[in-house]
Image (cartoon, rainbow, N blue to C red; front, side, top):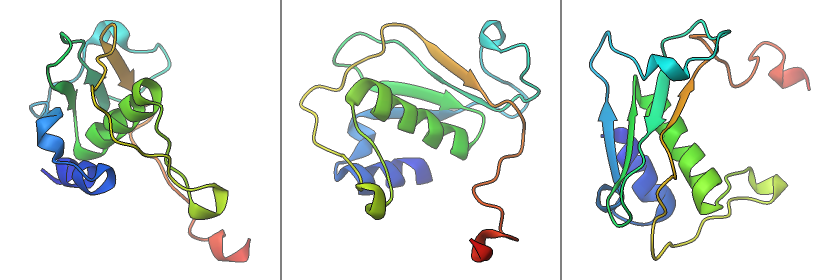
Length: 125
């Protein structure tokens, strides 16, 4: 899976020994009880709470949602950060024990489409 390869390259580990990533079957979505009222999207990810020592379990509706969920986990539970070199670069380090979230985390996108940059005006700035 491409997301596991990204995590392996970024963290310099075999990510399959730490993460259990699962694509939700097409047409299904995350736990609806977590859906924000303003969300118009079915795109989501969830990070399960597991006993210590088990793999970190993330499921999502697509590859980008899995990557987003892994990024949230690494930032919020491992204290890592990812940034451009000019703004300080990445803060990535090896973990002896990978923490589990205390409870299930579910996040829905607010819309189905998102953009990284406005390609029309990017070169003008």
